[in-house]
Length: 306
Image 1 (cartoon, rainbow, N blue to C red):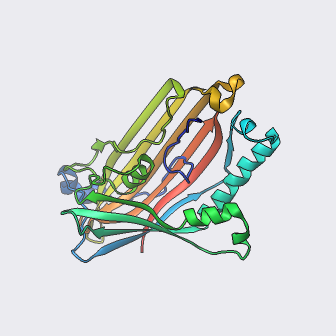
Image 2 (tube, one colour):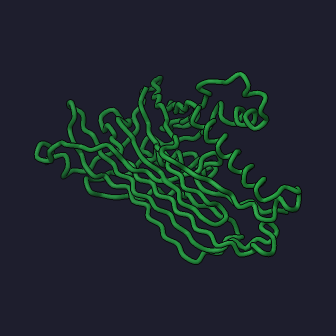
Image 3 (cartoon, rainbow, N blue to C red):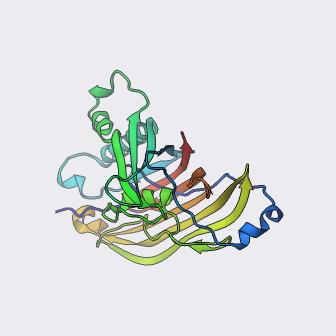
């Protein structure tokens, strides 16, 4: 039986790094008292209130993707290497186009089942549909995948993740977008998103080198139009290098496939302490991989209140 090799953030999304473009120009002199004190970052929703965020996770710039299927297809088909490479490229391009043609909206509501918990649901719908879409089997499959609820989870109002039962790739998104420190913090303090894990290889991967950084910083506290705003910076890196040792997948000649994977995520967000919600959230995620998967990807991540 062929072992599955699983990669980080989501089964339909190949990921890469976040570079932020939001800057603050507020003087610390106008806010000297509040920056010395600790603050609580809590989600705030009245009983019947809801928050709607347009959710952006789209490709930016040029990207590439090739999957080394090794001896897998040789065992089940007479296809040439060119056929296999073309199939992988076509599938990836169709998946990318379908994903970029999808609207995502994330809805936050008070949980009707748990106290002090906020339910979070990310919903997808196609922006447009071409007349010949249904004639393509791959497009039909993707249409069924890229619609309806894409993510369902929950967080406590203090920012900690409540839905511990989620799959890892789903929990990655929930944590990146909505997890907050569940304790009072002050300007300059840092914390870690312990629920984020981009890379997830199975037992066939033998790691030779590894590096991980996961730092979230309360970089500033400022006043804008009478509101107290917390500025938060995300700096996440995951890197591994090693060998995939799976003769059943790659064939005997490719039993040790040297592979590297590097995810980088950088983001800047502004959270209203008074209203308990994001004012802005912008980031860039990048992936650079070689070996089993040869890929250069970059995606923009953003939350825009509706």
